[in-house]
Image (cartoon, rainbow, N blue to C red; front, side, top):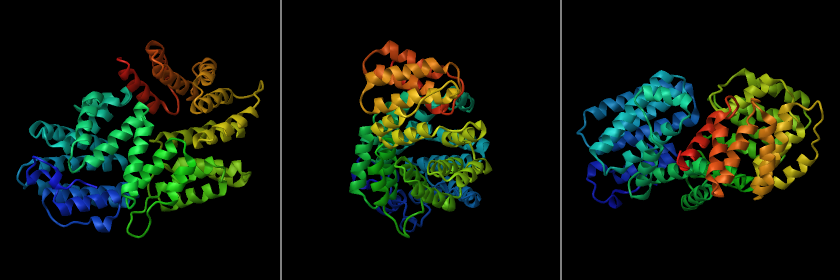
Length: 473
């Protein structure tokens, strides 16, 4: 998957991986650790070794491996200090420091992680300044610049304090250079760029086409199979996502990837296959060592049991939402708020939501037709019904029919702390942006940012802010 030195024109041997290192790095991305093992203490070997160790740690989320992983990173950095200066040596040092930052943040050492991130960012800036034609550094620097530049203000002040200003425009520029010109990490750059554009710039077809093409070319890659399943799921193509899940490469050579079972559980839940969904989530929880997605998994187990009429099991799963895990991710935050809210879900609205998530839009509209609000219907449910109807119509390609329901959701919501109104404003902004009504689009994106408290504020605000940048704000 990595480029071989023969296509990296104009680079000296110190700027590229050896053929053996390139093959081992490709196996890291394939998630086949035994085939990725590599001896050596030069920069390329140390980089591949560290990529493998951080992949194993983050995939397993096993806290017992954390100390040894960080210690090995420190040892590799000491070895690099003794090597002759060069682009690959400097890049490897900055990359290992970034891996260390990721490990520290994921396992709850946020202050250390922030310091490591600062070191990596500044080192990568120096690599780009000193070796402007060394494209791998632009891949990583561009990714960091984009993410820091796109963060909500509630996070950015801290990173500015560390001297990490970030820039969406500079980040995209650097990523595009690394993605469009041959280098050892071009594939990585192409994937990062495509996924950013899909998530934040509404370019799903391009991202899916790239991942589909790469996965067909490299069916042995578990990473590409994972990305294909993820993209199909995000784009509401449940049947195709499940087919990709069942066709993924498996066997003892591959790293266990428990999160795939959690994704499959969602897909089966969308289809109403409640028993199969529960089996997948229970397998996820049995294999997974981490603290993220645990609350979400128990919430989905609750939904599967509740919607299938198994009330005692549903109550057991509901209680377990509060029994462990963290609320860093929005999915876990949503599950925890459901537990604390104590307000029962509406079965018809819940089924419609799952049908929409799965791409079954017409079925969702039929389900919504069975919902009747009364004087005692909670505000949350009265907001959810028009919002779900708007989403189904929008995704069916009927924007003119969706628009009034988005507007109705906003009008009913006031300052209610639910995500339906801010998401409605965001979607209306996108609709008017596509139609070229920039002033109206801008007003709706600003409206989306104005809501102070809801379950998906971070992601909604990031998307609205980036859309405003595109409009020239």
